[in-house]
Image 1 (cartoon, rainbow, N blue to C red):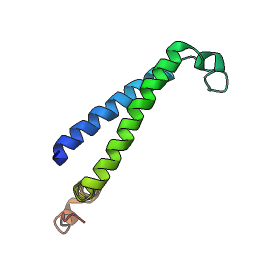
Image 2 (spheres, helix red, strand yellow; image 1 turned 60 degrees about the horizontal axis):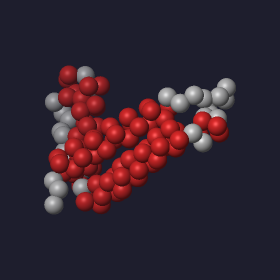
Image 3 (cartoon, helix red, strand yellow; image 1 turned 90 degrees about the vertical axis):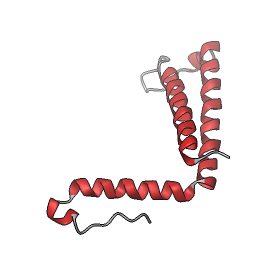
Image 4 (tube, helix red, strand yellow; image 1 turned 60 degrees about the vertical axis):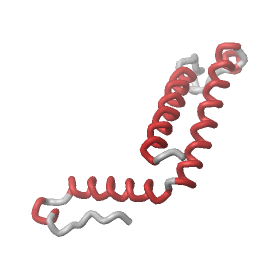
Length: 104
């Protein structure tokens, strides 16, 4: 069984890999409209990079579903705490003492 903190590390690793492969795909030449031309898409290099990206994205998508199913409470509490922290940055000092940090 994976703990929430271990799962977050795995998710970060998968996100980093997906972003790295996305950057590689965006490095291929694009036409005037911003779309990769068909002749580039048909090249072995592009197809290989696209295949790696698709695999990484699928792993990330599946893992995100696992996270939502197994750690929904932890994720909700973490988002609530982050939301409260952002509010703290916006509130004047006089109002901060009246706000309590309770997770939803």
